[in-house]
Amino acid sequence: MKKLILIKRALCFVAALLFASSTFAQQEIVKQSQPGFDVVRADIPHGKIDTINYNSKTVGNSRKALVYTPPGFSKENKYPVLYLLHGIGGDEKEWLNGGTPQVILDNLYSQGKVVPMIVVLPNGRAMKDDRATGNVMAPDKVAAFATFEKDLLNDLIPFVEREFPVLKDREHRAIAGLSMGGGQSLNFGLGNLDKFAWVGAFSAAPNTKKPEELVPDPEATKKQLKLLWISCGESDGLLSFSKRTHEYLAEKGVPHVYYIEPGVHDFKVWKNGLYMFSQQLFKPI
View 1 (cartoon, one colour):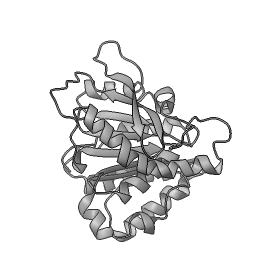
View 2 (cartoon, one colour):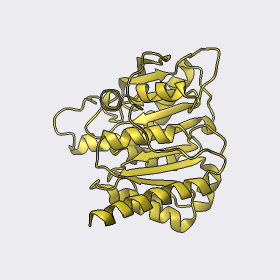
View 3 (cartoon, helix red, strand yellow):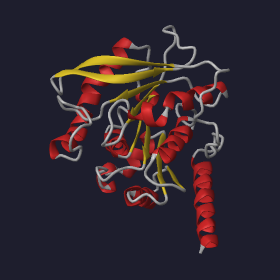
């Protein structure tokens, strides 16, 4: 039985690489993260994490987000932007505390593997009291994750584009997230392809719309997407939501990367998702 499981894992890995190779032929194949990819190094330049406050007309108050600016950041340059979303039990600090994205990206920059980008880590729970306290599954808190689409498009993105030297076209804007944020990324990204050309979901949660709703016009989606990434742990209880999306996309011939790796619903999988996804962003495909 153990031998069969190992064979299954190997076949999943090879299939993912072959699919990525045929879909994104102009890029190097991105490999699974190796030990040390998320360890702070003192011998390389580091990016910076800042807290911003923006006025949300959607919610009716001021909201917080974190912003990562890369090593060597200069206001004289223009940068693409990745909006990186958290899960149902987190807030704008969940990635920072559990996934150390700034460390992962710093290390990748030092190896020349990623395009310099600004990363915005918002609070995806768009309501006046947006803290991750009490019953995070309460109906009003769950509904606030859907409301965040308006906050993101109408309040946060315009604020970022006023305050930071960013490129403002869809080809230089990406969205990705873990769990609930993975579902948001598929819903908002595929639902607004005039705003996002790069979409990633790590262990997407049940808030993910049905694939027929996500991609009602496969031919139009093919023309607009630069990259659609879907990854999950093979022992994750939520794998079925990624699987059904993948199967629909495959049936309709919509190019995407579907990456299944050993693991469950945790930051080990999500950090690797960010590690692999970020290396493909904003590069010729």
